[in-house]
Image 1 (spheres, one colour):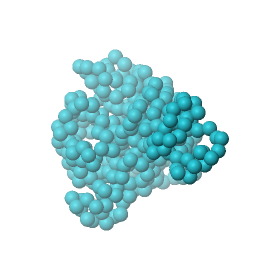
Image 2 (tube, rainbow, N blue to C red):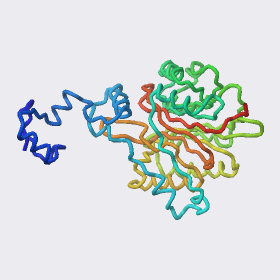
Image 3 (tube, one colour):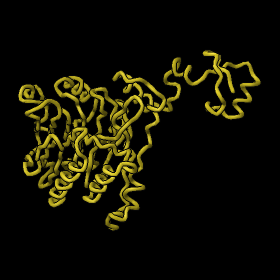
Image 4 (tube, rainbow, N blue to C red):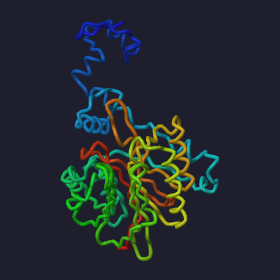
Amino acid sequence: GIFCDICNAWCHLSCTSLSILDYNNLANSSDDWFCHNCLMCIFPFNRLDDEVDYANTIFNLSHSQSFTVDYIRNSDQLTILSKRICSNDDIDPDYNFLCHSIKNSPYFMSDEFNSFIANNAINDNNFSVLHLNARSLQCNIDSFLLFLSSIHLSFTVLAISETWANEHNEQFLHIPGYSRHLQSRTDKSGGGVALFIKDHLSVSVRNDLNVFNDDISELMFVDITIALHDKVTVGVIYRPPGGNLSSFNDHYCKLLDKLSSTKSKCFIAGDFNINLLNYETHSETEKILNNVFSHFQYPTIIRPTRFGSTSSSLIDNIFANNINDDYHAGILISDTSDHLPVYYISKTKMYNT
């Protein structure tokens, strides 16, 4: 065992991170040793590996959640690509032969993201989508606008879930430079989705897709003309927690069937309240993921987007079907709500300039 010089308690060697060599060195020296619990009280960030872990920890603490060491081990929990795409017998081999790879969606602070887009020659002419679960856009609109002003990219589409909008507050939900398209609840509070599209683009609402059922899913889809004779379909979805996953999967499968029949580029952003980190252990999550892949959609975000006091989850995503497109996707650190914003940026320019 080894003695803590703060709390005067003994710890068994196997309960510490010490090697035998470290233990022997301490035993033969006069150096102090502090147990894990005492270190957590004195230096709550002592186990952080890098700036991403630090940023995630600050995000967690800013929402008044208790800090634990388990919280910061979230970086590489999902390996959808290796187990679900490359070796899935249910998927057409011609699709696998494309050797498409899901990219390692990074975390960025605003200044890091600005450096990233500058280094990659990304500008407002790149087609891009940002999703945020706002948990009341009216309450968080100032914070969201401040966050957007810190980013040196004007996203083509801002997809918002949990707007908490209604007929009384919709008039306050405006973002300068964007047209808005809302689906709000009428008989109860919460929920709601919105798409904000750069106001110089031509937009048509897809009423054939916008079947709103706030017990199963809430959604809004539009077609956007991003270049001459070139349209993309963009949607935002919010699936309320606690709803029947099997019913949602049936509903979502019918939606993807309709989208697949158009053979156009499609992007579906949202908070699905389905933790993709559990796809190997939760059968309904596996079914939904199979459903997505069978329609040639894939998740562009593969790291956690929401952090609790003792766990993390990947429930926010942007699904895309343009497997041949070169793109960037990742997660931005922001305290606008308790969900992190996720983004997709196509390397293809909308217009030739």
